[in-house]
Amino acid sequence: MSRKTTRVFIRDLELLARIGVHGREQGMPQPIRINVELRTDTAPTEDRLHETVDYESVANAIRAIVSSGHINLAETLAERIAASCLEDKRVVSVRVRVEKPHAFEECASVGIEIERLRPLN
Image 1 (cartoon, rainbow, N blue to C red):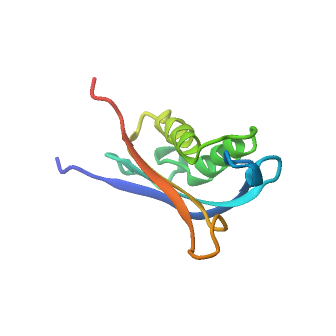
Image 2: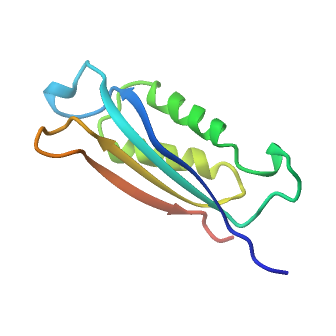
């Protein structure tokens, strides 16, 4: 049997978040951009949503995490998003990028990217 890999992604999800440690970031939401790529080792055998990772569910989970309250670090936000994605047992790896597009006038954005793998049993 051949091995199958499926990548599910969300590109440039733009949200307002209460994030940051600097005084100018406290108490006021700022725009963030989130990119997520999930990898599974499965593929649907039928044309049915329940056989794949639903990117709408992933986006809704990200929205809930972002709206849950102030987060100091982009790294913390990325870790929470990655952990949420790995709750689906079909997901074997997740890459999360969190960007702040308005952090500095001199650049398009700043941010972080993490990759997390499901632990081997």
